[in-house]
Length: 305
Image 1: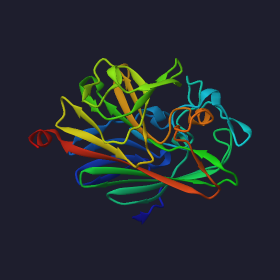
Image 2: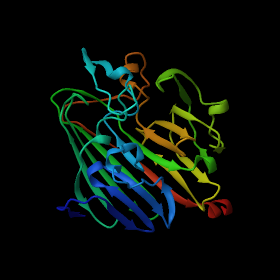
Image 3: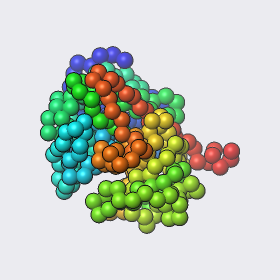
């Protein structure tokens, strides 16, 4: 990839049938299609789209995923406080990088490399850096994140990916999981239960009529998404360190998410009570990387095989 020197509002990755719009300054994907078939929900590029991260097609989650209750937790003998970071959300969510100022490091026809530098502050009291590579090859889009603790003390850490898909009313979802955290009224973990009955997706289930915002545990992939009115489906896989998945379905917003993440929601608070939260601790100078892949498949060919 060649070094990038110009400020680019949206760059396009275009290879192997893929068309992917990347907003370098936001560290986000704003559209993603394969052979003219929509894969990720397309961002409406209106005048203020850069200030509405919830409208993006996909963005990274770091150095934590989902919510931290009341923006407060205990770590290494200290009380840590994090400010809320989104309107109408009482608890800080999705980490610090999704609203940060990113830099384009390099680009080619089939890849883009981005970086984000976080200085310790109210959004997260540890300094860290995050590298993101978005690349396509054949039928697969790969997004790789590499997180490094740039502070002089140990830092709690989590990584994840937040892709949005459209049209849940025509979509079918299939994945295996061991359990699920039942959310309270703030969408924070209340109690764990087995992923059975109405929360069993081991056989493909239509999303029509569902309303979900649940964190599933023991996910090892793949997850498969198909739409009744589209010729292609999507298979989602991730590294072994990504053992959780947040499933969000909204009829009102006409979208849904399957978010591969490394930790349960509010892991920093539950880690004092459980050993299966997925929370990691990075020592000063330590790095950790994780990758998500989206593979497109032809539904008709799948049926024939």
